[in-house]
Length: 341
Ligand code: DAH
Image 1 (cartoon, protein in one colour):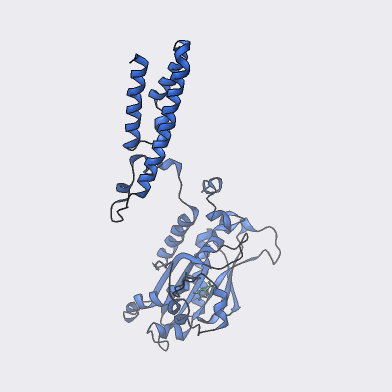
Image 2 (cartoon, rainbow, N blue to C red; image 1 turned 60 degrees about the horizontal axis):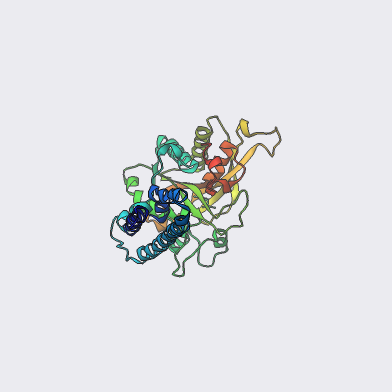
């Protein structure tokens, strides 16, 4: 066998082996050995060139086919679901972690931790909500009777078994009341905030998303009144926007509060275009005095204790703070947008 044929045979064996032991075809086709074979073609005597060129091309096709077979074999391999993630993958297919200087924290969790810091300083505990819940927590414990028309405002996704992707963080009210009610016996107040993700069946536009975040607040104790509610929201908003801001409430309806209000905050100076009445206030969310039935569902005696609750959209607040015009940016994975934070 000529020296060239000898090299060809040797390289072919090597490259086949690399593919069957897990190297990707792309890698093998880019290998120096295969390149060297191609580079050899023009150096050969004219009468050998065509035949050798053909052999090298055949080898390339063979390697591609072998690669395809191999991928199919790997895909059919049973997966051990109890194994650590990388046991089921070849070296080449494992995710390569990017160095951390390529990333930044997403603005929503970053802002949530700032919000939580403010509430910690105001004496609140923090709880998480959940991504899937049931009718009792989402509606019944919040004083929505069956077939109550107000349920329509919380149209969301539901599984065939009747589980619900919660449309508001109020779905946690009953749980946090149950969890913290022991502090009432010690003469302390329940104070909890719940920032988390919620879901709605929405027509999407610049201010509406199907998946977004809310921050819920729940306070219960003796002699708690609407004045405390307004003061709490006002203190929080002034801290968050880093300037003294007024808050106002106006009557509204929620089944789980009585009385119920919408609340608005005075538009911070840097967001105010002019002095018109329209520019003066920003509508932020709902609030009210917790309905006696909601307290009773958590076995808290409404004749002894009263409380207030509120809920606002987190994106809405973040959009105001940074002058972001479209809520869809947050979930868009647009790096130009995300890198600004
Ligand atoms: N859950 C309401 C919503 O998403 C907002 C809300 C209103 C929360 C009043 C409350 C409350 O806790 O007391 O529309």
